[in-house]
Every structure is written in structure tokens, then in C-alpha cells.
Image (tube, rainbow, N blue to C red):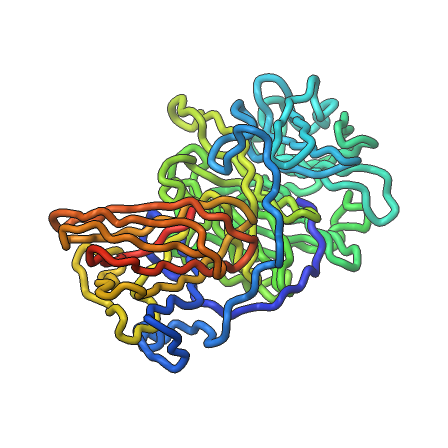
Length: 491
């Protein structure tokens, strides 16, 4: 996705919380969980003892009165907005309309779809967005388009695409231009723009434009043994190379098979590089990210996936090839997920769109559950951190022995809207425990923790309305049974 630098925000230095393979630790950012019967600013407890690195001050405030966006009926961040073959999507906005472009399918070399808003409804356009392939390319292998709106005085839309060479099995990157975002795009004459045959070719082009207009292209070298993400400077028109490529990222420990599908943005003065890891046709395909202070790196990788099949609890399989769509109303993440398996590497991938929030340079994606461990907090005696063998983090908080005992939790919402807040708890007292739920200081709902039996844990949930950014919810005991909370989860 075409990006420009800037967009600085106040940064809170926070440590991500690793809470299990099923939940992405990248956005599990806990500023503080104060468990108390009253204020205790000087208290100490588990978080301080563990040296979490969290600041002692308040969290980043939420925008005042941030309205919840209006979505079309049926939209969900975990449901495809295009439920047919539309892999490796990228989206731009032109003349008030959103245009999406995807990998070749049975109907087009480059399918195009349009919508009035990022969340749809999306409609597939008739015809083909790419007029024809260049002489060097063969049909059926046109992947991962990237469209760049006119900039720097140019009136042309620029398309970068991957295609297979006629004289080999290597993929290379070509360029094309059009006067309209709908196309048809006309390929440049001559050979490919990027084609490192010694590294197995190249795929997955992504554009980045600095604030001063300097253009860059990111791509993945396609040989399995040499698969890596490279960066190269472009000419001012974006149609030629202006420097030598540089490898800026390779596969890291714990990442499946290879890295690919880069997309670069700048947030809070940092370069944030999204990328995919794994085979696109397997459930462990995933979206990850890394951050650097310089465009050439070094990039520091986040310790766990931002999006994964497990993180979505299999509601989306193989989420990847993510593309950031920046807009005045906030950012969205456009990506694909596997809809059907047809054997081997044959899969059908549809397009998904989810709101993307930022805590400094840390991304948070709506629809991915975020877990907040109850015991990672300062405790002052109203409740205690209790070791529990089967708890998520090995401990829980409780019991809430007195009416009025309160738990305050800071959570991060990628966008304004309704969320489900659940408590993973145990209540073996034989009596239901009733809690009052408040959001940002206002009573919002009630939450009952029914009595439980045995050694297992259960979940109780309530719907809450949150503003974009940091929110504080409070749980106050109204009496009844003695509950213990393992963790809270926002989705």
C-alpha cells in the first residue's frame, strides 16, 4: 500500500504480554490493573516485582467523544467482505470510491472490486484491470498487485505486479500505468522492473513514499533458500530503479518456512513493516510486524503473530498478505484468509477488512481477541494473586471477599464501537457472584459469575461500548459468591 511518512503520536513504552498461542501477544498491552477497595497510588505488587517496564503514569487517553463508525449490515471483521477468490488484496481510495485489486482468478488477470467504504459492501467489477501481460510474462501467474495513486505531479496510476517469465519458472515484478483507478493498466515495454534470477526471482511488490516524495519498492526474493524482504529506491515516477536493492529482513527463529508480502507504514516516528510468514495455503500462515527507526533497518520483530488462525480461534484461517489502508477516519487492515482447501497448494482465499488501531508504533487489529492477565498488577490486599496450576498465566486474582471490592483494567480498542468483554473465572463458593461493570467511569452493564464446580474455568461476558484508544473498565463486587479471575479478554 502506498504510504507516506509522519503521523507522529505520543509513545508509551510498553511491554507486550505473552499469554498463549491462541492469543496474539503483540497487542496484549496492559498499562495497569489496579485491584483495590480504594485508591492506593503508592502500592506495590506483582507487576512491579516482575519488572514489566510499564510506565507509572496514566495510559494514553482516548479521543474525547470518538464516534463509533457506521458499518453496512452484516459486516464483521471476521467475515469476508469478498467471499470469492480475491487473494493478496490491496485497496486505494480515488474520487470518493474505494478500489480493491487482487491476484488472478478464473475471471481476470487482475480482478477489481469497488465500494463506498472500506467495510463494503464490495462489488466485483466487470472485465479485467490489466489490459494484457507484457511480452516477457505468461498467463496464469499474475499475483499480488500494488496500485499507487498519482503523486509528484504525475497523472498516472502505477501498478506493480508479479508474473511468471515465459523463458523460466521464475516470477518477476513488472509495472504498468493507467489514467483511471479502474484501469485498464498498460504494462511498460521491455523487461521486468525487478527480476533477481540468482535469488529465485521476486514477488509481492509494495510501494512506500516518504514525505519528501522519495519512492521505494519492497519485495520478496522468491527462492525458498533465499526468501527475504528487500528494499530498493525508485525513480521519481516510480517506473525505474534509482539504487541497489538491500535485504532488510529474513526469516527469524520460530517463524514458519519463509517471510513474504511486505507492507510498510510510518507511525509515531517509526517504520512499521508488516509481513507474512509461512505457506499461503496452510493454516499456520500468519501476519507479523517489525519496527525500525530507519527505513533500511535494522527491524526489530515483535515476538508473536499479529494475526493467526489460533488468534482468531479458527474464525479466519491463514490470515496474511496484509495491506494498510490509511484514511482520515482511521486505518484499516486489508488481508486475505483461506475460504476453501482443494488439495496441495490449491486454496480459495477471500478478502477481509478490519479496523487497525495504534498504540504508538504498535498495531492492534479489531476482531483479534486480546487477553489481559489479571495477576499482572499492583495488589494492595483487597484481593491477592493466587497460584493456580491450570490458570492461563499460572495464577489468578481473588477471591473478592467484600462488597465494593473493585478491579480496574486498562484496555486498548483499535476503533470505537461495541466489544465483548469476558472474564475467565472460577467461583466455587456455591453462590453466584454479581459484579457491576463500568466503562471510563460510567456504569455500563452487570456481570454475573455463576457458581462453578470442579477444577475448571468458565467465562462470563458483557457487551461494552468503547472509544478508540485506551479505555478503563471497572468491576465492582456487589456481594455474593467468591470469584477468582484468571484473565480478561476483549474481542
